[in-house]
Image (cartoon, rainbow, N blue to C red):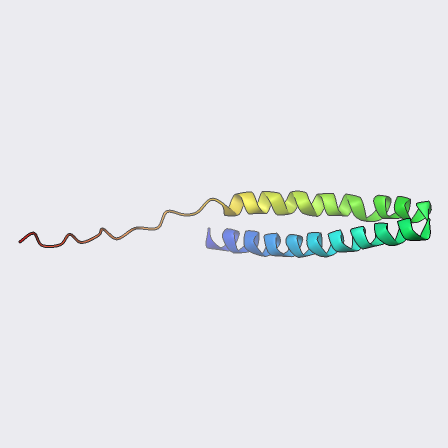
Length: 84
């Protein structure tokens, strides 16, 4: 079970990094395309990057959801102070 959690953590971190870097690239690319007046660039960005970002976001969300489940840790009982 520990290896599943570790694999899920790695998957979460990798997809989050891809998602953040891709999001920055996507937004900067859109800004450049708008300033340059190149509608074809916007279409290219939507066709190539947008779908991959949506997949990465979905995988990241599912991995984050799975990581929200924690194994129960045995908790120590608080020791009572002696009543004197």
